[in-house]
Structure formats: C-alpha cells, structure tokens
Length: 107
Length: 115
Image: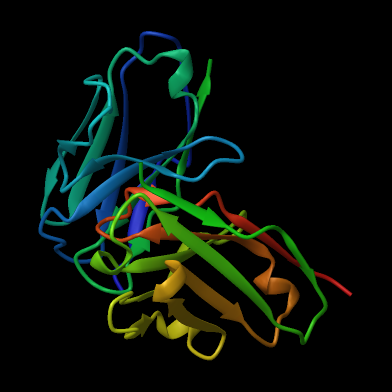
C-alpha cells in the first residue's frame, strides 16, 4: 500500500494568512492526489483533484501543486469558513490511502 | 442533483453484524462505482473497497477482507455494506462515496459496537 505522510497535523493561522499543507507519498503517485476539506459532523468535501484541478465551487484561494512523491496544498487569505480539517488522498493505486489529516485552527 | 442517502446509526453487540445502505439518486446508478470509507478518530480515513454497480464486481482493501461485504440492488439504486463479527474496533463512521476520486459522499453512518 502507498503511505501518505501529511504534515503538519495541526496548524494555527490568523485570518488573511497563507497556509500550506504537505503530503509525501511512499512512492511516485503521478499527480493522482486529491485534497479534501472536512468540517465536524460532515462528510469530506473534494476541493482539488489531480494535484491542482479545482472542483467546481472551490474558491480560487485554494491551490495545489507537486509531482512525483511530494505535494502541497495551500490556502491564501484564510477565511473563517476555512477552519476545518484537511486530508490528502492518493488514488493512483488501490487501496486508495489518505493522509493523516491537518486540523486548521484560528490563532 | 447527485445524492447518496445512507441509513441511520447502528448500535450493535460484539460478534453481531450490521448492514448499511446507501441509496443513490440524481444520476445513472450503474455508471459509477460506489466506494466505502471508514473514519475513526484514531485511524483517520480508510478505504474499505468498491463495488461495480453494473456488474456487482468488488474490490476490497486486504485489511477489510472478511470484515466487509459489498452488494448492490440495481432495481433500487442502492448499495449495501455488511460488516460481520463486529468488535469495538469496528466502531466508526462509515461513508459511501461515488468513485473517481470521490466527489459525492453520503452523510455517513455511525456504527457503535458495545455490549
């Protein structure tokens, strides 16, 4: 199975900050990484697929980049509605595997 | 609009089984696989497996072979996951999701295993 190492586990930011989350895969995943946002009591929401393709409805302050084993996800100008947990998912190989998550909190 | 509606919370005893349903609407059911995902506080998100809603073919994460059984009823556009020989470690929220990476998810079903 491909292991996805996500960091940091938690992040504290002020409104308007830029934050970055990283995921490192245990092998090359050929850009098949997606990023999800999850709020308490809700299902994950797909924000980005294939490294950097924003889903319809995803604000442009969200972005993704990377290649090979190393990927990053950023939020520029953090807003209060962005307070949530974020997860990466590799879907190049079965079983799909998720990163451990990053909890974004307000400073 | 695409919707996946899951069945309600379950409280089950150790050693028993539960069967969770996921009813799809708003799209052609047999055009997309349904995946199942487990979420716990300790283990995070784990992929259980998927079912080909057209053929009924399945693929399971090795970790969940023997634990989860995926089935489908095309006539009602509903996918099912049965969890057997339940232990407290099976307590979790279980999601169904439309594959692809999953852009559409059910609301989740909380399964609590306790004596």
